[in-house]
Image 1 (cartoon, helix red, strand yellow):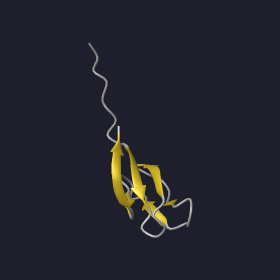
Image 2 (tube, rainbow, N blue to C red; image 1 turned 120 degrees about the vertical axis):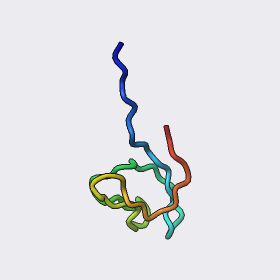
Image 3 (cartoon, rainbow, N blue to C red; image 1 turned 120 degrees about the horizontal axis):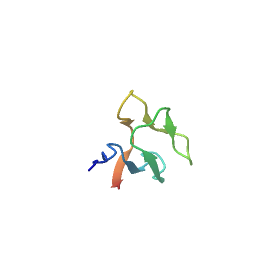
Image 4 (cartoon, rainbow, N blue to C red; image 1 turned 45 degrees about the horizontal axis):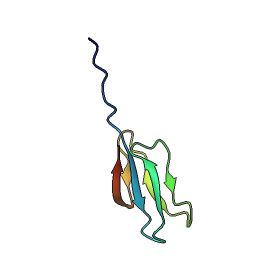
Length: 61
């Protein structure tokens, strides 16, 4: 029987610290992610897990 490995990355719901907009982003981004409303950076790539600059509200499965 072959066991399939679970993915280690998740989607996260974050809140922009400037305008309080909530949006869902991937936990391991490859480019900078900005707020869709005000343009403030929410996450930046580090080569692995993202460096989040916003408050995490929920980790989605």
